[in-house]
Length: 302
Image 1: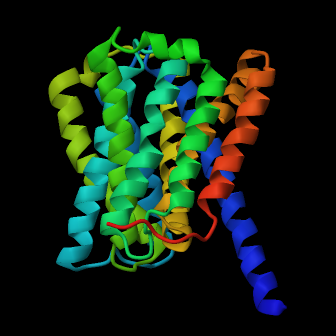
Image 2: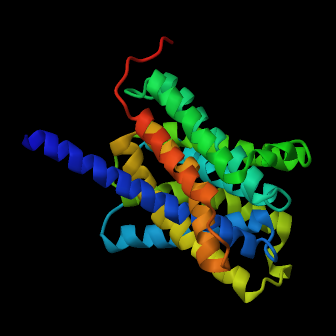
């Protein structure tokens, strides 16, 4: 009975980390809304990764550790730093300037499906099963319940902005598969290396395009940018790598089904928005989708 109990405890711990990561990442949308009012999307993305780099590399140095070496390791760092951080941060920041949160939630739910399909072909032990596919469908239904079917009618209004958010969601899916195949390395060092790459890409771009020294961000925007760097980027990256390695990208991908629901909770806590019955029902459906996807079933051919 002990092995069974051990497996059960590890599963509960994985779900706890998953919920914590969802809670942190869902808070980023509120912070982005505050920050992007006076900080351009490109500069905001650069601020996130630079702050995260300082924090994570500082931890590496405090531990007396060094960043891993090796061409394969740094190749993955470059890919994840660009595809999993620089690109989606910029695309989503830009897209959400004009796309409402309900429609953005639906567009972001592309990520779990993209991750499961990509992991089927490129990640060992992540075969696409009928249970996983059914879980994706059920989870998507939960998102629709949350935002309401009427939100789907908004598709096509700001096509480029919507495509940007969808592209950011797809980028996250690619990054999750890459993270699963990354060579083993300490979590903090791996997270710091990825952020160093992202900073090396984003900082020069922001300087060249936005000329941030000419900007005049307000105190709320600066505080939001600092928060984004510390929690949804630095701390969340550590949890993300831990979960991808221990639970797999398929489970972690379902975060983007939880984020819309938790976004409603943040709205209620910070902005006094009302938590509706639809939000409670959506959470139940989404959690059911995650549970279904974790059932052991025969893999699909492919």
